[in-house]
Amino acid sequence: MTLILFAVFPADASIASLERVGGQVQPRDVRRYRLDDVDRRLGGRQCYEWDLAFDAVPSDAEGLVSAWLAAALDAGAEFAWFAFEGSFSFNHILTVDVADQVFAVGGSAGIDVAIDDRAQVAAGWVATITAVRERAGL
Image 1 (tube, helix red, strand yellow):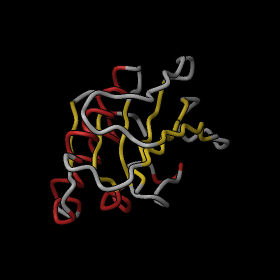
Image 2 (tube, helix red, strand yellow):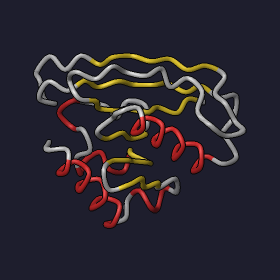
Image 3 (cartoon, one colour):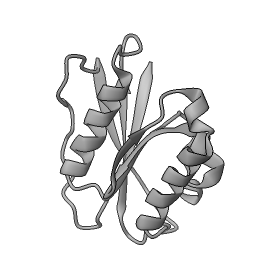
């Protein structure tokens, strides 16, 4: 199983590796990709994806995604989120139509996690995602 972390950094940021984040469970493999924003939807900021491969669903998934979000923010990300594979598009970063595909988000106001499917479709979760998007100026 793979958990996918996305993070947006300032244009001039030097991106940290983020290969080992605290906690008992470590990914079997970590792959990082820079996502090219050819249409400059992020205003020149940089977007990266980390694919965290595990042999099974981590028992403390909420703690794990919170730790990785905190690490990305500590490394200089303006905001970061975990989402399901296939949900990423520069046109739909943290938009209402993909809120149910985002299960954790972090930014200047803190970290929020919605591992449970019911939480991802709740009005409060949509408001959380929208607030992070608005604070990011998207």
